Image (tube, rainbow, N blue to C red; front, side, top):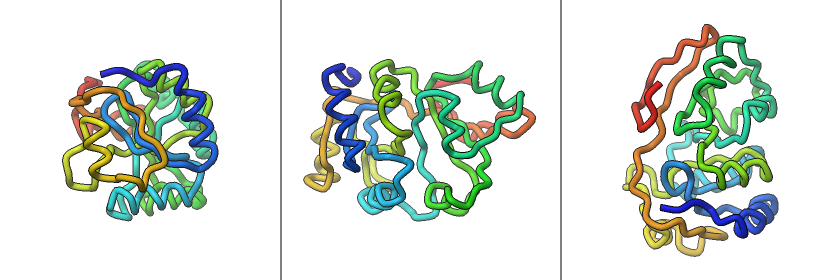
Length: 193
């Protein structure tokens, strides 16, 4: 398993900023990615993945400051928890109150974020907007472990594919983080909180 090559970062950045959707190696598995700040892109990814419309997607960000883009106000205890545990394969669910994010939270009034540890992916995220990054598969099917597997799912409906080798990684740990900084584990993955 390899990350994104540095030469590819500029190329991928241009494509994502132009509103394209791609499949790339993330820090855990192949993800189908597009701008989290573009409602049309988010809807396209729901359709491509045949994903339940009431199920929010994980959003990859490059820093805790990116949470400001989603109008999230952290308590001191939440901030301390995030600073201690990120970057890692840890997805953290936070409350979102602003209605303009409904296209992302799908009525749940929460969003899940992750700052990945993988250096090339972090570099990409610094150059793009935050990205929605669900696994590269149809909902309920096995996540693609290779680009060939991803192409079987999406074919020419995706603008670009970045080959990172074979992925058979454990998905991220998902926790819900309340204002007191208490984390409730919803899915135990590779990372132990």
